[in-house]
Image: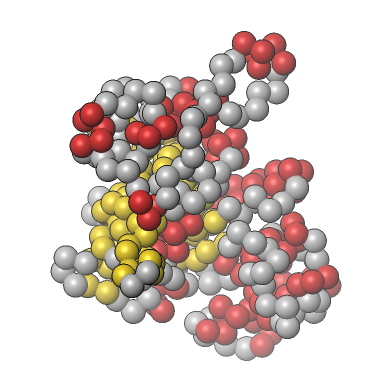
Length: 337
């Protein structure tokens, strides 16, 4: 999908991965009466991202996508698992390793979903973008600081005269560009894009997506691109991972997943994608899932998708299928497909 930049898109990790997540769990205690029970927002999720690569993470609302991104950056304290970034272990529950994240904040950034609530209304655009520069002391003079900020604004398509304005004076698309400039200010290697275009109009979505791709080609930054729109994810991603109720159901290269989906949940998601050609759309078959998404407080035993799956068997209720390679790096967690 994108060209990597050699001087940026490198890693000291021996396996060549910039980010490796192993058996990540994020449970939140929820009070029910006199006792607390765990809400399993993320339950045993594993994946990796190479330098300069985009991994798209898709699934319906409430499946744990955003929690995965926030937990990787340790905005939420992980419950269990292992997180390795550029060869450094950031978190390991088994070995009781938890590092200070401040030195890694400038290498790992996040673009938040809501461009309206993620920007401080009392700060000018210049101060919003420059906050990371201030925290990490990334300039020597005020002139250098301003030059960096104006350069970032130009990179994301904002004018220099916007620098002294406040966030409420901008449209949703412009606010998201400010958020992207803020993330880029500290020269990160990895950015979590949490539904970064879902709050924008379709025409603005296309502009912002193209900007993400251009930035990746220039800087070699890697993305975890979280979204629920498969068309958007397929456009920008090198690989796609499909989540359901805190679990990974299927991962594959973007084209492979789009052309050859295997898991029943992925098949249903892809059948719901609008087809622009009326003739093709007329002959396409919509796979409608029955029932509602179970609560993560009371998730089904075994495979979480079994209560809505036409292929479910007693084995599906007894145990969770492992992600197994079906060839060409196409991993599927299903006993019957």
